[in-house]
Image (cartoon, rainbow, N blue to C red; front, side):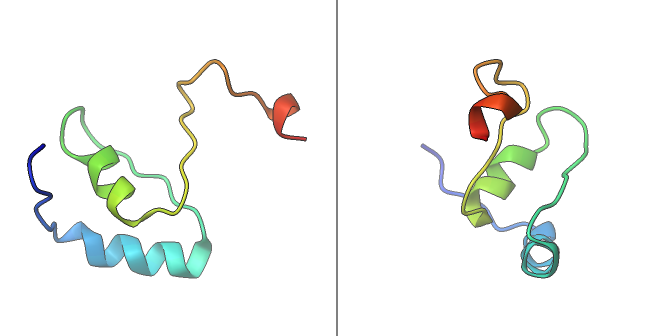
Amino acid sequence: MVKYKQRIADVLLERKLAGKGAVLIDGPKWCGKTTTARQIARSELDLGDSSVSCAEKR
């Protein structure tokens, strides 16, 4: 696997996560949104994963 390259957005993302606890990262396909978020996040929820539903979490 390729080593992660720090991005300018990393500092901003860390600050927003510390202040809010959750963030939405929006952008074009294949620009590194998921890779960047996985470097910082303690957990993730894949909204495209059909095996996850709100009813299962309660």
